[in-house]
Length: 227
Image (cartoon, rainbow, N blue to C red; front, side, top):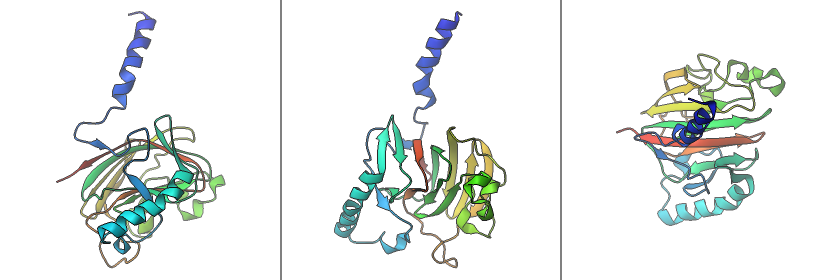
């Protein structure tokens, strides 16, 4: 087959490569921030059982900050490194989460599970200044478990700046497993309750995209709820 036809076939397959996986639904429509609101690092127990009217107002109050620091560009979620974390309106129990991210030097980010910190995303270089906190070991660990098991990844799996990284994260009960760029970096570790370590995490809560310190981009966010 001529090279030209191989190229055409490649272009035709591009939408399939990023298609919604079977059994999953998308958290991001590629066009706007529908289905998301803003929260910082706050105990989900402080708001999750608010009366519906109060919760609706809380979400509404967060949107000016979100619109200031988040935007949609070329089908990607982009944060400028500041502001509240993008938070799903829907709360999840047991799930499998897929997403891709791309970050820059000095950025420090993560993924909150049910509103709890966090699957860590680092600038893993020495110049990033976070080696003393574990950045040298790579992204994907449950950093707030420190010093419990799972706080650092079992393997270094980060790609260089400018590359897209792919996460697969499962959470069933309080047990979390993480794959970063196809490497299994956390295996069935208990996510520690950041606010009260003696107490288990809530059985249901939002996904949050934590961002600070530098631009980070997200795409292909899909979730499958596990019965």
